[in-house]
Structures are given as C-alpha cells and as structure tokens.
Length: 374
Image (cartoon, rainbow, N blue to C red; front, side, top):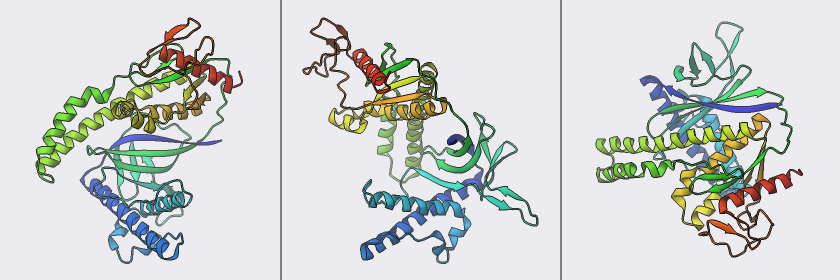
C-alpha cells in the first residue's frame, strides 16, 4: 500500500535565492488573485464554474515567466479546489490573497526533465551533495535534522517563510509499506481533555502542559506595546515587528516540540487510544477560554496521534462529543445531571468519590473498549 509522509526542514537561501523565492511568493499570489477574479466574473455573469490557466496570463505579464511554472499551476489548482468546496457548500466563497498576510508559501512538483544534449532524464527536485535542488533556485543549503528513509520518493516541495523571516521546506514523499495492525490485547488508554494539563489519562497520568503562551505572555505584551508606539511602516516598526514574530515562533516551536514528544510516547506505550471528538473552537467561544484552549494545541495533538497511529499500526478511537463522560460515574454507571463545571471532585450517590477528570478519562476508555467490541 502507498503512503504519503512529509518532512519539514529549515533552509538557508543566499541573497539571489531569497530574491527568487520572494518573487515566486508574489507571482503565486498574483496568479491566484487573477484566476479567482476571472472565475468570479464568469460565475456572476454566466453562473458557470470556469478556471483559466496561468499560461493565458503570461503573454500580458512577462514577469510570470521568471518563476517556477509548476508553482503557478498549483495556484490554479488552489482556486479550483476552493471553488469546488464552495459549490459543494463546504466553505464560503473564495477570498483573494492579501500581500499583508504573514503566511507566504508556494508548492512545486517533482517531475522528470530531459538533460539537454542527451537522452537521459533526471528529477527536477532531488537531494544532491547534502543540499536540496529546486527549480529556479539551484542547490539550497538545508539542515537535515533527520534522514529521509530510503524508498521514499519525493513528490512535491512546499517552500514557506515564517513571520520571523525563517525559511522552511516541507518535502512530501511517497513510499510503499505493508503496515500490519497491532494485535489488540486490551492495552488501551482514555484521554480526557484538560484546560490546565492538556489531558488526564485513565491511568491517572497528567501531561502537565507548561502553558507556553502564558509563560511568554508578559514578554510578548511588552514587545507588542513597543510595536504599537512605532510609526507603522518605518524601519523601527519593522525591526520591532520582527522581535514580536520571534517570540510567537518560540512559543509555536516549544508547543510543537512538547506535543511531538508526548504523542510519540503514548503511541509507543499503548495499542489503542480513546479520545473525545471535541469542537475546540466552539468550546473556546462558549466558555470564554480562547487563549487557554489555543495555548494547549489540542487539535494539533490529536492530529499527531492520528498520523503516528497509522504508521505504527495502532488505533485511535474517537468518542462522540455528546457522550456524558464527566457526568457518568465510572463505578456504578449512574449519570449526575446537576454536575457543574466548578465541581472538580465527582461524588456519586453510590459513595464513589474520584477526581472529575480521572473519572471522565476512565469512562472514555470504557466507551472506547465498547466501540472496539472488546
């Protein structure tokens, strides 16, 4: 069976390569907006779904020939996908890309090109002499913090720039493997979401999440206060904005590193993990816990568990979000309807007393076992 897996690395382009990357970012945004504008015009006048190609724009805009054509083709595919999602009522009408958006990226595909003067072919994207070869950029200095396993074929590369100025590449690979599901013998754990600790497990393990945003909140507030006093667009404003971006990137990296370590440990330890299918966005709005919910990165944590489980042959069981895990007694099964959010200790009429989150995680584990028919 074929699988896809992406590897993200930091790259260090020289001044010429950086200029080409920035030009490509701009051209991709330009093409996306032009194609979307034309598609919108056709849709409003004829009520038809028609997407023009980047090739039709090049005669009038010569600068588009200076960048990777596949990056422009992928911009067209993005518009096509956005319109398809709109027509199928999955999203709202596509929006134009803004130059002020801090997210900058483009994607290019790996293709076989014929070498001039020969009958030989070679890939447009390849690893060469410890560097990464990309179309229009040549050899890029890259920091390989881990190896791409043998047998993984490069399909595409996404070049991106973080708000703090750092450049990264996400290398999408394809490989064939026969991943056998691990024989389940009851080795399952239930995880209950915790605002303070990320999760509490049915084994009474607590993630003890360091709350990185809260940790850097004062430093970030001071940096943002200085930024607000700068004249927008001035050199000092850009310098201070860079400092703010560095703090945000630090928080992001710390969070991701913590979640990677703890998710890997859980996948290695258990054959199945039972979790609730929570709507974190709705929860943060309803309970006014926006910062705390975002700081935990629960959605990112669940995504990590899911893809790591696939490659390990393990199982992730999602419990319905309406399942009364907190209100149900894990001892007798009675449901306590009058349980409040402020009640941190669960006391049942049967005499059973337990920590609220631990009780919920045990119920999530038992429900996971039921769904697995064990």
